[in-house]
Amino acid sequence: MKMAFENLASRLADTFKKLRGKGKLSEKDIGEGLREVRLAFLEADVNFRVVREFTSNVRERCINSEVLESLTPAQQVIKIVNQELIGLLGGKTHHLDISGSPPAVIALYGLQGSGKTTTAGKLALQLRKSGRKVLLVACDVYRPAAQKQLEVVAGMAGVSFFTLGDNIAPEVIAKRGVEKAKASAHNVVILDTAGRLQIDDDMMVEARKIKEAALPRERLLVVDAMTGQEACQVAREFDRIVDITGVVLTKLDSDARGGAALSIAKVTGKPIKFVSLGEKLEDFEVFHPDRMASRILGMGDVLTLIEKAEAAFDEKKVAEMEEKLRRRQFTLEDFMDQMKEVKKMGSFGDIMRMIPGLSRAPVDVDLDPREWARVEAIINSMTPNERQKPDIINGSRRRRIARGSGASVQEVNRLLKQFFQARKMLFQMSSPEKLGRFRFF
Image 1 (cartoon, rainbow, N blue to C red):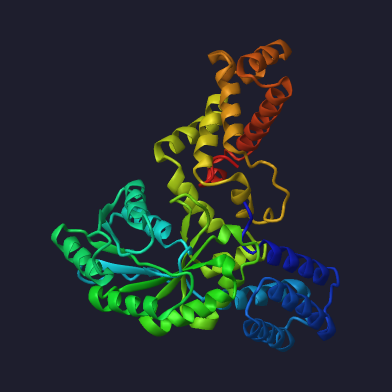
Image 2: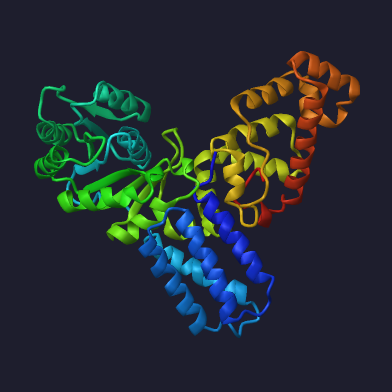
């Protein structure tokens, strides 16, 4: 999976490395560094006016601050870039407004193909997990099978679904959906509206009618991050018609440039509230400007990692594992259980990139489903005694395990090596003050 802003992050890291290599910095050094930063932003498809303002602000702060006299000038530059980057991305986290008397109505707008229907399911799942009773309302009466798709997504998210068919005006469906929610004690309604291939008058008239009929408290624009600066123009048009309250960026995992995210908040004045980072319904996050800036600058994202760990790990199992580690016990069965838990958090590569200092480290631990199945097959081919006491697995046992699992001896050796390395690391971290919230790395 590509990391959002991968190209930009790489270019910025190289630029900062050069600055660190210079020791003391002159105005000329800062100017040359910012030229590289400007090029990196433009290559990331960031709006040129945004780039100009950003680099101008950074330059002014660097020249007018203590950077030139600092003993660690490069670190001071990075600090300033980080602060300006947070401002560029919106400054602070903006949460959904679902206060007031229920139901809170959320309308999703956007062009066709931006991912509105999937986003509706992702948002519904997140709200359901936080204790909300959600109703998804299908207002797209044009795209073939759009309503059936939303019904399937609603089932996957474990929430309710409503529609009146494709012969009823969208604004009527929206209004009736809200009435249905009130009658059935749903406290959140999400309206999945229709899109077009491009902005046209019919879509904008319909968007306004749905707003007037359902009075959505949140009017979120769903935009494809891969459209780059075009997303800004789309956002401006929808904002003009329905006064959007925020933006959801989809397919951010597929865009290594990230220009839309770096431009849209500044250009429109409307915050990015959520980002979609994969195809699964769980691949959906609240957008935190400070955390995203940290990722871009290679500083990791520990807070998001903690949240993912807390959501993925069963607290009872965590307590049991902590007790085992204190007794310096860790078996292959524990190893497999921990791998399954970590798998829920996403790929190992994505996890490693959230750890400070490892964002640019070469990661070769991402496993596809077939590799996960092979690991389980190898461990399941061992005897209970071997799983409990892996140190007894000698050459003949490894050959037997390989035959039983359909793997090669080399694959068995590699798995055991990974296990022993993980066990050693966990034992080193097994003091109470070091266990923390992370159980596997």
